[in-house]
Length: 331
Image 1 (cartoon, rainbow, N blue to C red):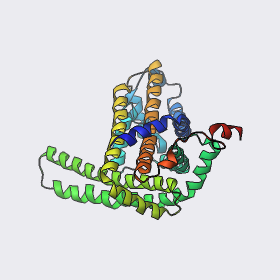
Image 2 (image 1 turned 90 degrees about the horizontal axis):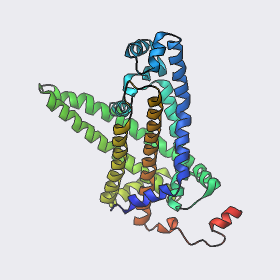
Image 3 (image 1 turned 60 degrees about the horizontal axis):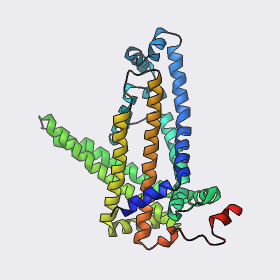
Image 4 (image 1 turned 90 degrees about the vertical axis):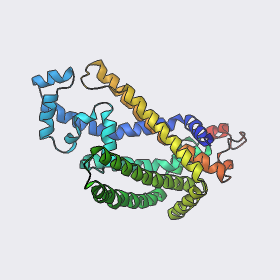
């Protein structure tokens, strides 16, 4: 049952340039925000004694002063960004549907659009499981970009409904009704956890369908995204056990990456060399998360091809002229 997972890991390993590329993309999108925040901190600290203290570690008194006057991007600079706290802060904001500053939302939207562009090339490369060179990769990316944009519209409508109507009903109305007459905090916490689990299953189900819609669109060269979604629903329904187990295994990989970061992440009060060590550990965590995301797509592609007899699309055929890598290099 886990053969597609191992196959997906191998496919990702055979295309290290993709992982390096998406990591550089992540850094490129994040760096302007980091530099802007650096400028805010530099202007607020100036040449004060607080600046000298900050070099040796965390100065909570100054941090509180900065937070009280911060606006926009500056409001994200809070103690929860330190080490593993950043993971928990993002998770809390996600499940509780918290708003982020406009500049962060704008950067995230640009990042998503870039991923939409790359998705077709990435899935095509994993489906073929052989080098496609830059022209083949970006050719596939361009081919599927506008198709995946149409798919993204459907995804936005579905997720907007989930985070708007469904989330509001579950965590405002339903949770309020369930806990209205409770006087035991433990029971209220348990009921909220159950609601989180149910909401998470709904999100995972939608994510699963949309992932297989992308896979079917690429492997079968589908132009209709509604048709790809229907085909994905049919495939997941007919292979519910396999797709669910594979998805759970991929999620487990993500949790392993999170657990490793929890063990290695630097805490508060560190300065000097430890800042750079903490930065390096953080970037390794980003790489691990990106690797898991790529394994999701690669393993789902492997499962789909194996179940619907599309293995010929992925077969690493014997090099034959003019299809051999040597011929491609000459051309």
